[in-house]
Amino acid sequence: MKYYNCTWEVMDFVDIPVSLASRLTDDDVGAVLVCIDAINILKRLNLTHCFNVVGHGFEPLRSSTVLEKLDLGLYRDFESPFWRCSRSPRFREVKLSEGPVCDIIDSILRREGGSSLRRLQYPFEWYHENHYMRYAVLYFYDS
Image (tube, rainbow, N blue to C red; front, side):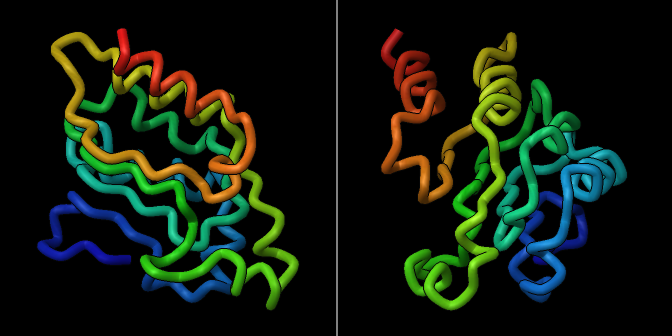
């Protein structure tokens, strides 16, 4: 995982082999977030290749005071989801669910005192379907 200056401000699963990252569960991600005190420390979270995560594991981020970037795109920068999907069926089975994810993001955006969240990257699949998250975030910023 990328951590740059050893303070756990950035957590990116890009350095973990795909064979392992793709098997991580919500329990695994949640345990790491609790161990690093993510609600107060973590500024950027990139779930690169964490295809098995549903979203319940983000609970330690509820009402985060410092989270600036949440990348749920699941792919590396400049990596095409089409290329990955054609090579392996497991990449087509993204389990990330809008219910638990939206609930956590909503708690961050509506936090008393304002939100530090500046960038939110949805999973590729959510761009092509009528997912609740797109409308919820747009509604929040339009109001």
